[in-house]
Image (tube, rainbow, N blue to C red):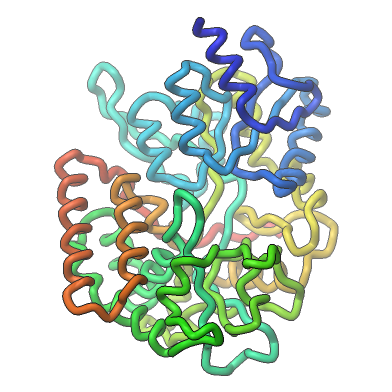
Length: 427
């Protein structure tokens, strides 16, 4: 029965086979499964890099992509059929898997791939009650946040903000990005890190929520006659009603606060500017940016799995990945860009900002315990419904504070160091 559940869990997902095809029986030790977030063609460059690894090792790899990554991985763990590796964007989730024993600590031979701040070492108790500090995951791809995108014709003009917060089960995260970035720019990395790791009460963040509400109100009423906040609730963060992608392509807004991944929806007439430049940071000279990442962890440890993790973070794999990607979708990696194919102008502009960053700080909501992160998402959605409603913000912050205290009692805050100096570019 356990074997049957494993095969069913395997075949529920869209799979891309590399060297070997189809869903593999658990007894095929040379076939490794990589679970990840990329689908609908976005996975093709990664699969190409995985294929090159297979050519070098002679092993078989299968990539399985899903947009419901957390739910899928939980189901597979419950069925006793985890992937060999999973690639996730949430250090908060990864911390839970490390504490539960589902994710394995990186052995010394690949520990060097755990680049901060994306992969800090964490302290976890083993079954014998001994506390051990290890890294448990490594970034395979990263993105820069704290960016505002606009067309050349809108550069330097007063922003007419685009905003959409719809994202399925994770709706709200584009709004949490706004709150996080405002706090980072207004208070600096130290205050940001204290808040994101549970050491600052939520009511102290009220000024940045109020500033965000003022930005929303500054848009007034857009071409469709609705306030920006309420309209954002019904809009996807990237997909338009007519099937096109990219909020700037809507035509009724000029500036979009979004991470570097969004460039894939635009041409080189849309370029990034640091949030601090647009808003005027009060911590001038710090050059602080939020970052996010896609991190690989091993859920079925074996020599082949650790070898694959090491290879996925190698220069050779990064060059293969970059070469297979379109110029406007070239991935970013810790330490610099790779690949001989010239990147797009927007890709090159982000890389320049990455290389010149003073400090980089891991996305706060990604690093929070999952229940607090989800409460943060919900608070953003409720706030957007009526940001000027008297007492609403105080109520929302009180609820978030109650959740923070609960997570403290449960000792769920494990991550401490979310900000770091950037890795020195290698190219």
